[in-house]
Image (spheres, one colour):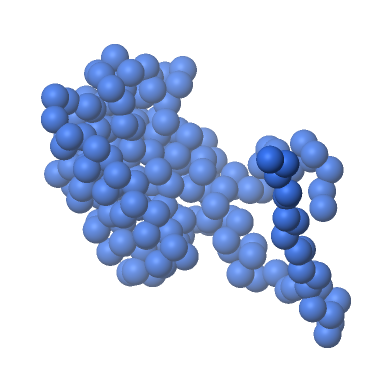
Length: 182
């Protein structure tokens, strides 16, 4: 087990996108916010060695997972950055869209093994969305960094040999029962 705080920041090589094929899927709904998220993501990708990612626009947040899944299954990308903005309105529609987008993006990760970072803002109002997509704080930039780091991690995990000694099974940790006093 590592020391606390030793692995809390990525190493430089973890954020090297020089040999990564990255796609960015962006929702047109709430376009002004989505463009700001895209600018943040593109800036981070370029700063880390990926100046020309494939950018795919979709109508809304509900369509992001299908486009991301199609890209992931194509084998032409190592990572995907999913960007969009869902702002709460007066109905429950916000909940369904936000939950479906998040769940769909998670399925892309788990079903394909291709990292798809979640850069979809889910905010209560436009001001929150603008605050999280600006030059100082930009979830699109954060999502791009997460995609780079995860693509490099998955690549490393796929190619590393096991660190377990040969013929030794891993030690299992037994659950501890907590007895509660009445």
